[in-house]
Length: 579
Image 1 (tube, rainbow, N blue to C red):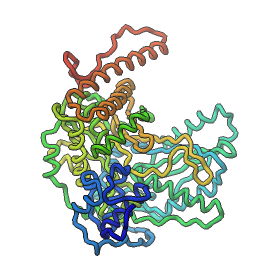
Image 2 (image 1 turned 90 degrees about the vertical axis):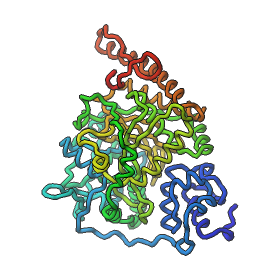
Image 3 (image 1 turned 180 degrees about the horizontal axis):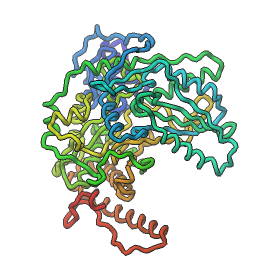
Image 4 (image 1 turned 120 degrees about the vertical axis):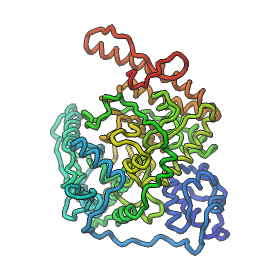
């Protein structure tokens, strides 16, 4: 048990923050960060709270020093500076406009290039089981909408040198209630699917707003479906969770007859002003990172367009087994490598197999929430950004040493995260119109407030599902937590189902190999995963072909396509071409 009387001010601050964030009763200054359950998600919150309290730590300090005693020894600290963060005044309505965030710039560019109203649309659906007060639920959403100006974002770009965003105070959140209670049970699912699809097709008008809406579907006295649809421009995953928490807090108050008080959150405009004051592109860093790199694409050349996908993207998903989860936790604690770094390494390895290169580049989503900005972790808006990650697969390196290098590179990358992709590509002399990558890795590095199966305010959350309309042909997503999940979301026009499903199985196989043998050489690991991919892809293609032939009632004489990976006497074309 920690004796707080013998701690320095800085140590006491970190002990209290670790206890709160890691949700443990006691923390000693010699307790190991990873043994306590810490990971990259917790690190973001810990660093922000520590800096707000005057202790200037970095995420890499937690990963390398690992104990509070060692962390304090590596950073300068001023006990007189250990002050609690100041209380914020409620956000006042801004009447001025603001610059866009780096990712908002990219989203606007692609939305205008596509001329598609549903580009970057996010739709979250769930069933609410229990007695729902629809009027109170709608009122709670309206209160939260009014309390967070970022939800009222609209853009202006016509006739201006640079696009701007503003938050009109007069907007109200569109909320529609639909009654399906008269439908038969076997009709409800199809009716809801049609409603959700029609909702997605509506898209959004970026200049008029609002860029968020809610549809509540009554299916019975104690059964409703909720459809929250918003443009990615206004919310990221972290903010979405904060928003849902505030809504259900307000709903609980209204439902019990209490006057609802919406939580006062830090102003989003503080972040936009902070961005505006940043220096320009660090060309030295980006040139050293990306100098001489070749673009890495998995989509066939003829499919590399900005056309909107035809209908919702497909998704493949694998939940990690219990033994694999335990191995992942043990690996993280023993070697100090986060699950996020492990997944980034896995995709780099698989991508190299696909394009037959040891030097690859792909996108990575970063949180964008600066720990040095007070209140950034509690603010609602769009903070995330997408940055290029370059990974070289060194055949003679051990897997664990290579993953440590990747983790360190990701830490440095986040120190340079507040730039547009366009600015980065210009800084390294890349020509316009040809992106460096067309795949993206997303690690859900935010606290999850709402999960399937939760019971909140007398309602049980069921059938929670999210549709995201993205611009990349393939997105690899890792959702950590008690039951980690690997997903691949893909555009069916550019990648086929057998390729994606076998690739996802190969990613799981990579995890199994690395966690079982951290010292394995990368060349042996690559060959093993390539062989597994080749076998699975062959089987998946045969199955898909058999199903197609059965559906068509014909028998094709076309031979099965060749399949990837490494070894001797194999087809060296990129997998996208072999497909």
